[in-house]
Length: 113
Image 1 (cartoon, rainbow, N blue to C red):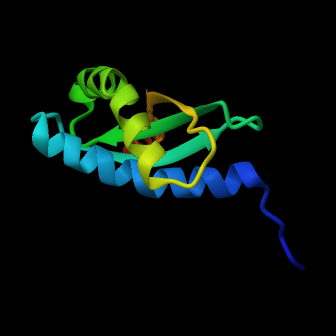
Image 2 (cartoon, rainbow, N blue to C red; image 1 turned 180 degrees about the horizontal axis):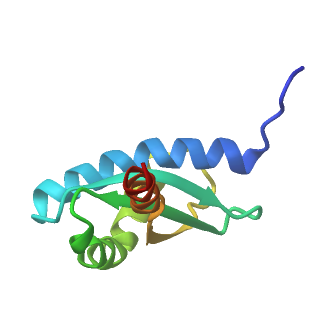
């Protein structure tokens, strides 16, 4: 059976690739904590993109997210040059705690056995 993807799914996949490159460069340029883009969710009207990031060191997540949100306008301007979109969505960076939750569950399961 063929699964169809809507426009917001395609835009979010392309944004994830492009933003990952921008974030990687920003980490090097601005001496930010090591960050990787885990997911991008775009609203149906393509107005807002929520970018979920993870950090290697969980304690530095708040600092990294704050720095990325400060750079969001610059990222958006760069994306307007590289992507073929009429209007690039507003970027909002959020910490993805799913990895932390997974590690916590794994730790609890190890303690039980």
